[in-house]
Structures are given as structure tokens and as C-alpha cells.
Amino acid sequence: MNSSDVKATLSFSDGSPSMDLPLYKGSIGPDVIDIRKLYGQTGKFTYDPGFLSTASCNSTITYIDGDKGELLYRGYPIEQLAENCDFLETCHLLLYGDLPDAAQKLDFTARVSSHTMVHEQMQFFLRGFRRDAHPMAIMTGLVGALSAFYHDSTDINNPVHREIAAIRLIAKMPTLVAMAYKYTQGQPYMYPKNNLSYAANFMHMMFANPCEEYVQNDVLVRAMDRIFILHADHEQNASTSTVRLCGSSGTNPFAAIAAGVACLWGPAHGGANEAALNMLGDIQKMGGVEKIGEFIKQVKDKNSTVKLMGFGHRVYKNYDPRAKLMRETCHEVLGALGLHDDPLFKLAMALEKIALEDDYFVSRKLYPNVDFYSGIVQRAIGIPVQLFTAIFALARTVGWIAQLNEMIGDPEYKIGRPRQLYVGAQQRSVKPVGQR
Image (tube, rainbow, N blue to C red; front, side, top):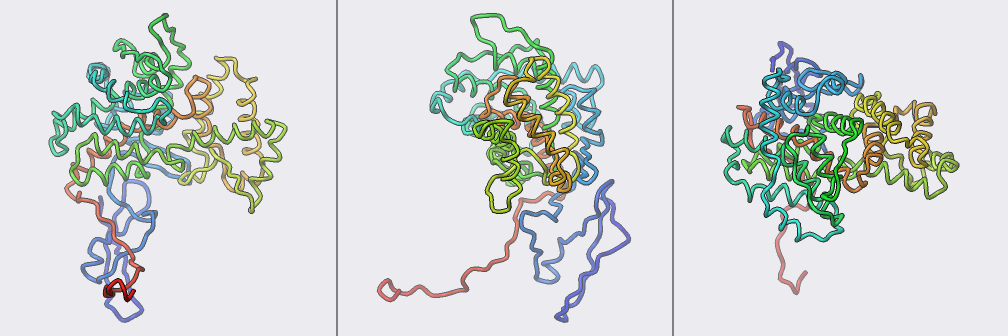
């Protein structure tokens, strides 16, 4: 952080003395005002519900410019990474700060591959869940339970423990997601195959069965890999902030990541692609493409409760750069599988066309977002809607770990303790029960 010569002066109209607040400049992005001494000097806190105007940390990992529609991982534009790198190279970049050279890539891939299996007792743990449990309910349990199986890497303050926990989590998440899926389907679990790439191994564990040889489709494997890259990190969003806050107490890495999984489950966060597909299903029930005009009318009606899911983004006030890449992948996958005539996909493309051309959506910057396209791609691949958020958690795990490691290595890191504006009752006395 570079301290600026410029100071922000806070003055009060009640005659309290004014104070100078330091200003810091990031390498890119807005300047920040340091308010750490505010309470000590004035007895006042700032009020910022949802922390929307507060930088909770300094970070070197991910940068988003919502107005430009820009996303950088360690300075690299997401477009370049999605086109030139695979997911494990992206993991290496997020964890260690640089893309691997050929030797480092081989070494990192080998390290991750050697940890893909999970403890056999995990299978018995799964049996405790109902077969119709939501995969995210299962995932919050499984990820939290990893600390019960791997307690040789639970000391968050030990860099060696953090390193091994990071590799284990990245390696085992695909296995756990596939196990959760197979369990709900009543199918046998497929063990990992370490000679396959990360995405191909996941597809094999998901869709193979012991009865026949499973043949990989390269277009689908590449699509899965791209979904992982595009969801790997996204700055200080709700689940990442949850992981940081949880980790700030010194809890073990598995517990901190389980907290991130639980936060991601919300429909406003990781569940957005599930919500987008459910919306398409609702329009389909209304009558499909013919009824799209009627649906759009309801979306525009202020008194209607109908919402357009999978469009617009809280941060991107321009086209989401991840959506552009996912749109390409979406058309590749639909083409490879011959699904352009599928009624649901036809409906999705008709909705996309309206959103990109109708002034109501264009003026409000309600462009299709990454969730809209990734939901369509996953459904085409054969992934059930309920599993979408679990796959998002799998992809985001590396980002959560990178952020957690960065926080622990930060000399300014403290246990998180947001403040409040108390508006409840003032002190009062308890009366005997008969006088209340």
C-alpha cells in the first residue's frame, strides 16, 4: 500500500475537532481512506451496511473494474487465462502469484493428482444423508468433515499445514462433488483416475459407471475446465469474505472453506445459475418461446414479483467479461451435442436476444451474466440443476484458499469484528413477573 501525500480531513458541524485521515493508493482502482484511528480519536464508527464502501483488506490476488467489465487474476485478464491456460495453471497462479513454467506445471499437477482420493470412511459418512438431500447440504457437511479425516494439516498458522490443506482441498473437491452426485443417483462411486486432466477426471467420476468404458468428449471437458477458471476467484464477495472472517478466528482451513460453501449456497450468490435455469423452466411451463413477450412484460411491471434471473451483475455495470467467454463455450457445447433445437436452449437464446436488443434491458445494463450461460452449459453436459452450486464451490475453492493464505500472511490481520449502530431499547430494569 502506498500512502498518499493527500489526506482526507473529516470535520464535524458540532464543534468537535476535525481529524486528518491517511489516504492509500492501490496499484489500480479507487483510493481508500484509512479510518482505523477514527474511533480512538473521535469515539465514532462509520456506518456501512453490507460493507459496500469499505475495503476490509489489502490484496494482490484479484481485481475487478465493474464499469469497464474487467477481471484480472494476479494482473492477467480473465480472457487470456481462459483461452491460453488450463484450470490447474490458474490454480498455481492464484496460490503462488505466477503462472507455472513447464516443470512447475508438471510438479503441481502431480502433487494435486496424488491427493484426489478421499478416505474410504467418507462413503459411510455420506450414507447418513437422505438420498434426496440437496448436494450443497451434503457438501457443507463433507468439506467440514475433512478436518476430522486430515487432522495432520489443520494448524492454520503453520505454512506447511496450509500448503498441504490447500493441495488436498483442490484435489478432493471434484471427488466429493461427484460422490454427492452419485449418492443422490443411487449409482456406484467412481474412483479418481490420476492419468486424466483435472476436468476430465471430474467428468469421469460424474458420468462413468463400472459397466462400460466411458468416452470423454473433448469439447465438454474444455467447457468444464473453462467453467472452473471463470469461477476460480472474484475478489471480496460474500463467500470469500466469509472464509476470511471465519479464518480470522484461527479455525482450521477445512472449516473456513466449509463456511464459504455454506455462504455460496444462497440464491443471490452461488445459486444464481440454478435460479436462472429454474426461471427458464418456468417460462417453458408458461408456453415456451411464444410466451416470452408475456414474461418480459411481467419483468418490466413494477407491481409484478417476476424477476429476470441470470442477467445483470452487482459489480459489473458493463458486460461481464466471464459471460463473453461462457457464451462462446455455450455455443460450442450446444453445437457439439446438436442441441440448438432443444426447446429450453431455444428459449434461452431468444431471451438472450431480447436482453441484448431491448432498450429496457440495454439502458439498465441488464446483460446476460456468467450464471446464465454456465447454467445452460452445465445442463447440456448433463449436470442436474441442483448440482450447479456445488460445482461453483469446487471451482471457487482455490480462490478461497489463496485469499485465506494471504490474510494469514498479512501483518495487519486481526480477528474480524464489525461494529454496529445500536437502535434497540436503552437500559431498563426487570420487574417481577406479576408486574410486567
